Length: 182
Image (cartoon, rainbow, N blue to C red; front, side, top):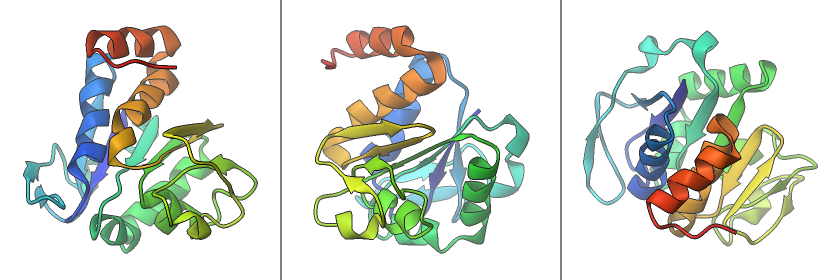
């Protein structure tokens, strides 16, 4: 199961593009309303989450996805539930994916990017403590996948598909939506 965390002010493209492509790839995906069942994104689009935090089954989790956006990223970072779920991912060798501000504000502040290559929203690289910040759309480094920003949401989503469903499936999904990869 892939869980995509939604908190008030999340970046819609960064959250929903991964949900869309992962589901096309055959992955089981649930959006989690961290701040309630209906969560409004940074552009004012309300999204009804599939489940609430208390409905997550941690043992079934393969990947946790943290979209960016403001104040969404700060709202995710302030959630004890999100922090506990991140710790579970790290301790249990699960995929952890973050895009835009989330690699800096959340993963960087937890020291999870130390010694790893990573990307984030331009100008926020300093928050990725100890990371080798690179200016590319997406970076997969072990079990951590980071994406630059909303414009990189498709590349980020394809990388998540590759991690969960394999490279051939990710390439097939990318072709089906007419997204050039490589």
